[in-house]
Amino acid sequence: MTNDRGSWGSRPGFILAATGSAVGLGNIWGFPTQVGQGGGAAFVLIYLIAVIFICAPILLGEVLVGRYAQLGPAGAVRRISPSGPWWVIGLLAVAAGTFILSFYAVIAGWTVQYLWLAVTDGLAADAEGSGALFGAVSANPIRNVLFTGLFLVATAWCVNRGIRRGIEAASRLMMPLLFVLLLILAIRSVTLPGAAEGLAYYLRPDLSQALNPEIIGAAVGQAFFSLSLGMGALITYGSYLHRSHAVRSASIAIVGIDTTIALLAGFIIFPAGFSIASFSSGSTFDPTAGGPGLIFAVLPQLFATLPGGLLFGAAFFLLLSVAAFTSTISLLEVPVAHAIDQWRWPRSKAVLAVAAFTFAFSIPSVLSFSGGFFSELPAVGGTFFDLMVNVWNEGALPLGGMLISLFIGWRWGARFAGDELRRDGPGFPSPALWGFLIRFVSPAAIFLLIVSRFVL
Ligand code: PFF
Image (cartoon, rainbow, N blue to C red):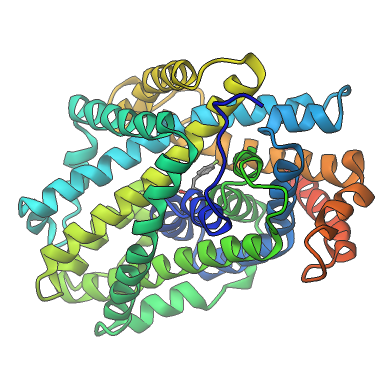
């Protein structure tokens, strides 16, 4: 191990940082957007099933692999299996971390701009719900390149400070604050007049929709993305744990908190969206129409219904920026840890190189919203940004998750992996239950999904 690796100050430090990685734009921006595009409650139902039966076992597995090997994904895989094709897990992890960061930082840049607008009273312009503000914000290429770049610089600075001082400290303060604010907003939203229609949309599944492979694919992809799973982020974070730190309850806490926050975001957006549309314009709310701008269109209207709403708006976008920040940190940490572990680079060189590459690659995602070539890629019939979301969230992460579960269940072997879990003493899930899920249930479910989406 080189000096540049580092470790967590404590077990709660790990839980906070891993939750900080999981909770981010995926929960508050991605989840409602995907629910809106995927037809409401049926999506929510599939999402929850995927979280419990597919993702939670893999999450525990990733943390165990990291803690066992004390190395990032590529190194951990090589330590357990010095030969064989499993190195692709490491390759996929580095690629996913870098490319997801390249479009994630763009959304994070919007969040910071909304914070600025809230502070300078600019959100009031959108209080009637024209949605024009998001169009104006997202279509300005120069400003978005600037804010994306600033977000990447801040992320790089923090990752460069290292594990304990940077990542852990940032998560500790902001996570509880974010939760309280979300709770207040959710209560406000569900008590608005006419909120029931939004609640029904969000909670009453249309089961004919639930069997649509496209919706299932999107829901499973979203679950992976939201839990930072399938690309070794949790192997990396697990590798900074001391081998005596127990991980079972920590993993359950991460899954529980992440899912609760995603669900809360839905309780904010849908009741508010339906209620406000019917009152302010007399029209009905179309969650599909919002696309990536859904939350940015609904939230300013919700803030306007609250006394001191702009203050709420400012606090909300500040905390959302921080939630995004603790996620971008983990995205960057995966390729950086790879360069440190495998190529023996100093941390600062690794950070600089990956951040610079990511910044360059973020530009087509920025330009996806300002008209022109990247807004309508001829070969895919959508934006470059949409293409990135599809390839990485719905493709690479579930694929990575399947490879990781096969690797743990069959190559590391249920017995050895189970022994690693047994170090923590008795508890839920038992090694036998977990072994069954990770050997059979998770990989088979993902395999069927991939076949049904891309082959059939
Ligand atoms: N889980 C993060 C979110 O929901 O915003 C996104 C993410 C972070 C995905 C880190 C993957 C990752 F490794």
